[in-house]
Image 1 (cartoon, helix red, strand yellow):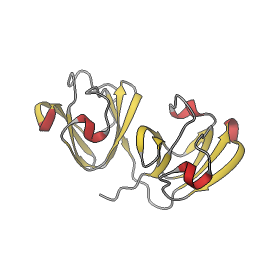
Image 2: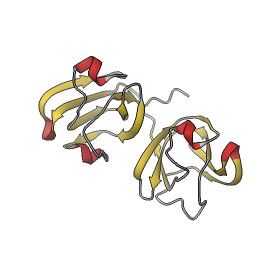
Image 3: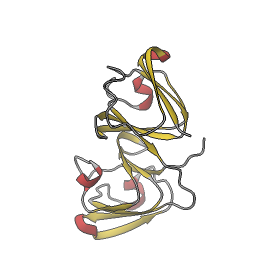
Image 4: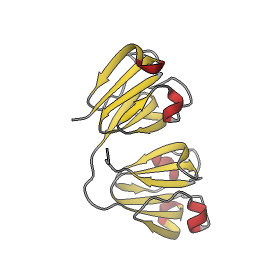
Length: 175
């Protein structure tokens, strides 16, 4: 079972809403979100309805204000459960669209794409196993993008505004 609780005010105060499934539009449940408790599971929360806009990865724990989940503001309008994945993780990243150019395969986290591969632009990728997070900057900072198994022929397929990626992390349900 998965559960997340949204609070309108910081430090788990004000009106709250408990959720245990994907929700494409949270606006009717609360007007702003300043703190979150993740009781179980891993979640992506989105700034806009229908799983659009900035996205933030949350795992079990407490987030007493939106800066704790790297939020840019107090706007949360949709959320999605990240299913548990048993087994290995594997992703292939490409320096050009449509799986062109140099290909690198990852099976583990990469805190700095540039340090490891000497480039930091990914134009396409193929997620073979597991769920992954792409981060705009090294050391898992900046805008986040959830990638589930499948093909992403260009960076806007995963919601990216540019091809710049600084780090990549596997999503594991360690908690």
